[in-house]
Structure formats: structure tokens, C-alpha cells
Image (cartoon, rainbow, N blue to C red; front, side, top):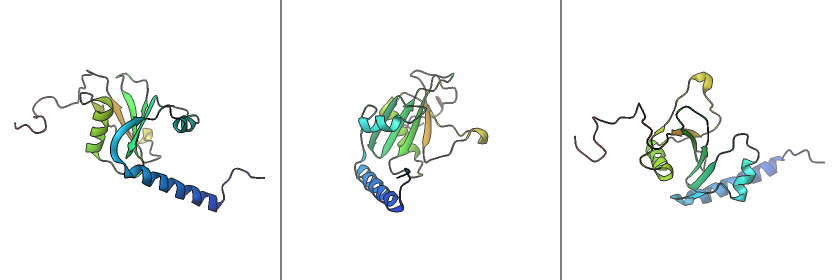
Length: 151
């Protein structure tokens, strides 16, 4: 009788299948976003999670999950992960993701927590997207010209 533990050959076969799937995903590059929240595969993955995202988006490069997390600013917690799980933090790509999925006029924050609140279990990056028209007290608003304009 099987105990649910995979053999070495089964683990290797699963890893090869995963690598093949990721290579196929990444071939698409940064393309159109798809809302995959209600797709059967996504639903089956989310069933086992304690904190289920309200939306899941995917393109050929990234997977993004959006959570309703109660906080005093009304920000949405957003997880960004490269589809190939690489540990790569590219600010300009995260800005593009924020603009594509939430709009150019929304402000997002990335927080580097105290050590006691740090959660570093995977190559995931977190943004807090503030509500529309939120007056972010730490955003540069004057003194710097918009990109492409001279001071």
C-alpha cells in the first residue's frame, strides 16, 4: 500500500514536467494579463490555502495574487511571483504590473518589515496598492518633474 510519498523517479518526473511547463509559460514573455481566478486549475490550488486571494492574474512572465487584507489605509495586498520562481527584483517591472492591473494613478508601497515580522519563505514580492485618490503621505508630489520633463 502506498503512503502518499513519491519515489525518487516520480519526484524527478514531476520536476521535469514542472520545468517544461514553466519554460512554455516563459516563452510568452510579458504579454497580456489573464484573470485566472475562476479557472479549474487555479480553484484546485486555492482550495488548500487558508488565506484565499480575491483575484489571480497571470501572463507569460508573472503570477499576481490580490488579497483583501484589513488595514487602516484600505490597501490591497498584492503578491508578485516570477513564473519560473527566480529571485529577481526589478522595480520597473513591478511598476508596470501595478499600472497594468491597478492603473497609473494608483500608488503602491513595498514594505521591508522588522525582522520579527519578516516572512521569507519563497521568491515572492509584496506590494500594498492604495485605494484610488488615497493621499499617500510619503509620495513625492512636488519638486521633481514627471519622467521626460525638464525641471
